[in-house]
Length: 144
Picture: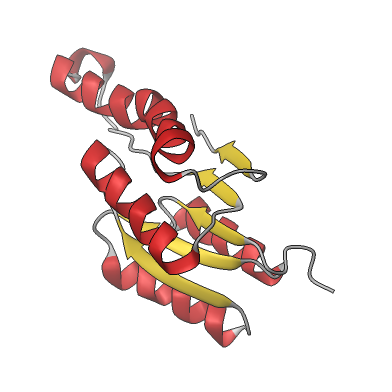
């Protein structure tokens, strides 16, 4: 019997890679999956199709989590559609494959804002604005 039955999970950056794998794994355990993507709608729809073809439940919601306004809009949409959020996997992130001496201050701040600072902003939106994640779990996936 699936252990995450009746749970709603948001996986940020779930249109490909680690996020897609996490979304599929949570779906196989019975969770309803929200596949978040910033710009890869086609990839997000492929993940949703893979989940539903395997008997799971999933939907894709666009939201660029490097933009606080889009974070708020995403959580508002989740609240409207589902009324709750049990699991948040903060997987969205970026990495620029440049030598250190070629990374500009703008590059650094863009990476820092999405990969570090906005983790706190995301949780703040959940706690203060949407009040969605009352007894759930927040996980942060980080790569090197």
